[in-house]
Amino acid sequence: MGIEIIFLILAVLVIAFGVGVIVFNRRREGAQAPPRTAAHTAAQPRLADDGSAADQRADEPAVIDELPAGTMRERLAKARSTFASAISGVLSRSAITDESFDELEEALLRADIGVSIADELVGGLRARVKDKEITEPEALLNALDADMKSRLAGTDRSLNFEALDQGAPNVWMFVGVNGVGKTTTIGKLAKQQVDAGRTVLLAAGDTFRAAAAEQLTTWANRSDIEIVRGADGADPSSVIFDGVERAASKNIGLVLADTAGRLHTKSNLMEELAKVRRVAERGAGKVTETLLVIDATTGQNGLTQAREFGEVTDVTGVVLTKLDGSAKGGIVFAIETELGIPVKLAGIGETIGDLVDFDPDEFVSALFER
Image (cartoon, rainbow, N blue to C red; front, side, top):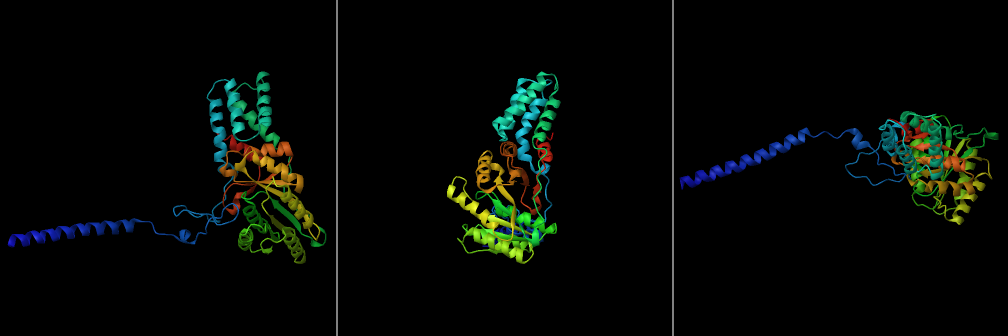
């Protein structure tokens, strides 16, 4: 009996010791875990490109508006990767060969610069090499860099704001298909214009998408500016007209007008969009910009959108969104060369400061950075 008691006591001690080790290790791990900071708890949910709250996994950090904005050069990693192999291939050879031209042409096509423009650029380089004007691989890349910049040079990319009679407001209309980032673009631009000292009002003309007005209201609250909205399904033209009249009565200088995401393949919807523009100018204001918002990741499809929208709304400029997430930034050349519509703004990230003036020299230099 005495031996059995001893064995029982030993067993209890072993179990107690094991439990103690487990508890100790768990406490030590808890002590080493980093504490949750105020930034983690206070961060707002990320807005999707249309301004709606996007699904966010628990292990993904929220985007905070106060994060420093990036530059175009910093954010074009994907676009630059399209040219990286071509550049390395050209520089790996001691002389310019047929393979050098093939690699450059392939890179241009993969970037969605367009077949005709790619042929023109590479054809020009071939002629200069044949004439002994260009003899070194490095000079070949520099020449392509310069040629691409020259194609985008000399274009007025400023946003048109006029001094109108009796304090009438300027109206900047935003058009484009659903999902390209119109609402987010309007929100970011509104904040920038307020920071620049202008008075701004938002007109929620996208009355067919249930959440559109709510999303635009969120952006209005961020910038502490007024918004005019109508009931779901209301006539978009009437909402924008009311917004212009409200701005005129309150001496507000700029109306940013959202419109419903129009499918460029639906003629009746495009005609309605043309009506929105006509009605916007019947009152006190004047439409001084019609900005087409295009998702850079759609590539050549963006050219089709620009052509169709331009026929009915007199597009004055393009906002190219999601440029940081696309390898197809070459669509800039197709839009400007074939349609003569300047790219005025570029979206290169999530924060308010990541809507930037489009700088063609910086854009091309970022592609050829090496």
